Structure formats: structure tokens, C-alpha cells
Length: 226
Image 1 (spheres, one colour):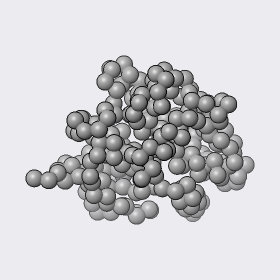
Image 2 (tube, rainbow, N blue to C red; image 1 turned 180 degrees about the horizontal axis):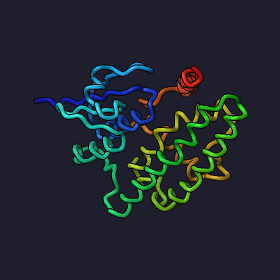
Image 3 (cartoon, one colour; image 1 turned 90 degrees about the vertical axis):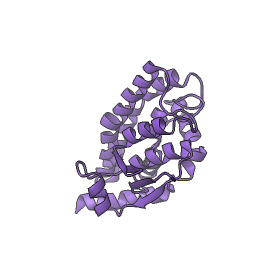
Image 4 (tube, rainbow, N blue to C red; image 1 turned 90 degrees about the horizontal axis):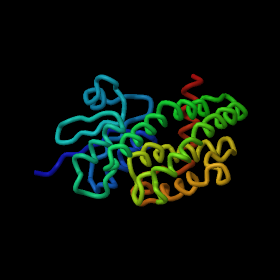
């Protein structure tokens, strides 16, 4: 019997992008159930009644919620396909989880202030704070990558997905503020990593165009101002 794999999400969502990258790395075919911005479908509300948020993975009738939990699930279920996403070394795995939590807990709120900024000047000030919170990850990359292209080494791993899902939104912020988030003089390793990640086959086929992110950011700004 064929496997049922469905993904409830929004193509512009960085959290949905995480899951799509993981599924692509494992070569898993899935049905994309696209949500409409500003509303929640019945299937979403039924599939995630607690948080009512995307993404939701439906695998053979079972629902899995929260992006990094889904990434872990994908790695576990399709362990024999594609590269391993979570590091095999327990300490490296723990560090990947720690820093992925840092990204969502510390960096993402700082980035959110860029989108909330009412003026270009306000966005620039918020962007400077978000950029500062990226700098600790330069040292993390040096330790985790072991001289390779990704946090996960030779291939995209757990921490790569946790941070890389934001790259389209980062490029949008760069366009809106004129600032570089990955300055080659300040964070050269992250700058090189971002180029490698963005050009990876598992990423570029599902990452929307930068102008689409900019347009969506303007739409979010309008909703916040309403």
C-alpha cells in the first residue's frame, strides 16, 4: 500500500520550508495542502487543534506538528533514505538542538522587529540587533561543520535547516534595509554557508523568489498596521 504523506502549510512560511527541505533531502514525495494567508482551513484546525498552526505533516493518517519535531520525525521514519539530518554523535545532536532553539527563541523575535518597523529607519535599527544575534553562530559553525560546507558537515543537517529556512526572509530584509545580514568581513563562514545552502538542490526548488518574500513582508506589515 502506498504511503500517505501530506503537508499542510503556506509556501512563504519559513517553518513550512523546514519540513519541505527535510522531505526533499529524504526523497519523500508528498501532497502539498496550501493554506490561505490570514485564514485557517478546516483540515488545519482538525489536524492541529491545540496550536492551530502550520506546518502539519500527515503520515498515513497520523498528524505531526511543530516544524523541528517534524524534521526529526522525517529523519527517523525515513532513516534509510538520503543523508542523516540529526547528527549521530549525541553531543553534536544536543548542540544542534540547543542552537536551533536559540534561533527560534532569540534570533527570530529580533528579526520579527524588522518586519514590525513602521519606517525604514526603524527597520534598520531592528536589523542591526538581529544581525548581532547571528554572530554567535559563526563560532558554532566553525565547531559543528568541522571544515565542511554545512553545520551538518558534508550535507545539510538539523541546524542548517533550522537557520537556512530563514534565508529568503533575510534576503527580503536586506532588500528593505540595505544591510547585509551575513557580512563577509564579520561572519565569513556564515556568508559562505548561506550561498551553499541556498544553491542546494533540496532548497532552491522550494524556496520562493526574494521579491515574493518582499511582497509578502509588505502584506504582513499591512495586517499588523490594520
